[in-house]
Length: 93
Image (tube, rainbow, N blue to C red):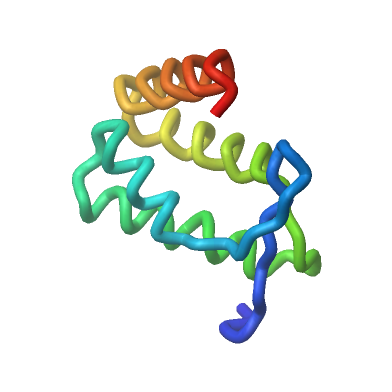
């Protein structure tokens, strides 16, 4: 893994921001995973992203990776995450 790699996130609105792995951990924890589980999940996803050749990733791909990993770990957390994402999308955030 390239520890020095700088990954950019292409957001739905077209803006670009730096990738922050702690956002994944915060979302996973808010969905219901323990802090340790959320950090583990964030680390797993971050490692996958850093191994990719691309320097940019879409926010949708990250959301899909988070959903997939939550589904494997905790059905309730997955359902809550999906509900939140649908609600967020409806409200234009």
